[in-house]
Image 1: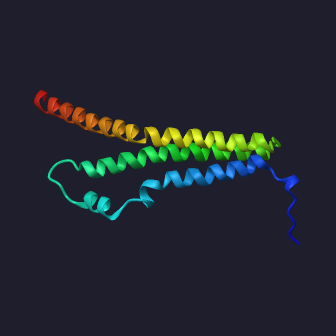
Image 2: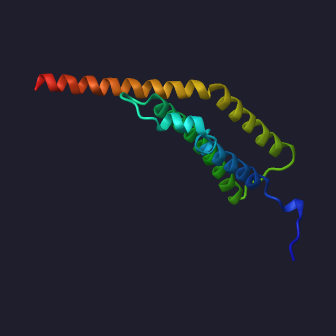
Image 3: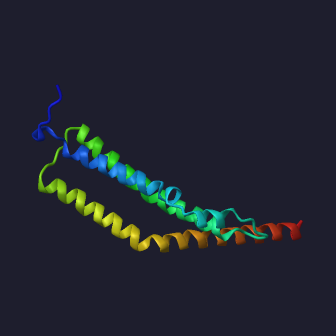
Length: 140
């Protein structure tokens, strides 16, 4: 017989599970929600570096960083619940709603900035690597 007693619910474990689900969705966001035109632009061959593919990879990196961070937070909540720590009522709701709103607002407002930063790092790194190769070629 299956019964449900709300007084025995470990809210911290429930919160951790919610964070795990949200983290997984953010983690795979760039792969699941890629539209066919975006996929086509990434698949087109170019003579030089493929900026669409690089932008897609930077997007995946940013989403992976955020998604894995939220997953780790969810696992930490579940671990604390397993150790016997418990919360309930308004503190549980505030913990879920507050942290979730903060994470989502930060991610949405700064996602484009982070993607651009990773894109510029990748381009600068490739340019630096090429100049080092050219310098080594002329020196030896």
